[in-house]
Amino acid sequence: MQINVSSSRKAFKSAIAILVLFAVMISLQFVRDAHEYISLLTGAIVFAIWIIALYGTIESCKSFREKTSARKAIGIVVNFGFLGLFIFAIVANVMDMIEAFG
Image 1 (cartoon, rainbow, N blue to C red):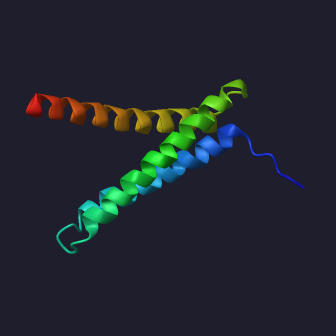
Image 2: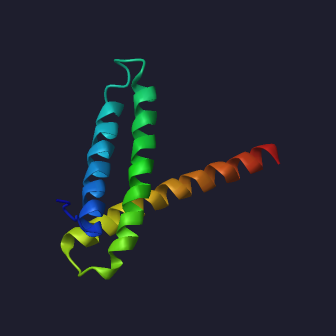
């Protein structure tokens, strides 16, 4: 028997995972001086957040046909927000590289 999980529920779960990973990443910044591998761990967390945000955004787009709920709204806002932040960061870095080498 297969249980059908709605897209808005998947998007909400990915939004919660993003928020938890983001809180872990922020808390790791306070112990940065204690360990030398914190920056590597932070990079891995950022990569995981990016992948989860991409998945959550796809599920959020699939959930537009479902009825409106608070979980759906939270999933859409968090997933699109973090994906937008990553796209903005990539564009800003590319523009800085063009300015530096151009």
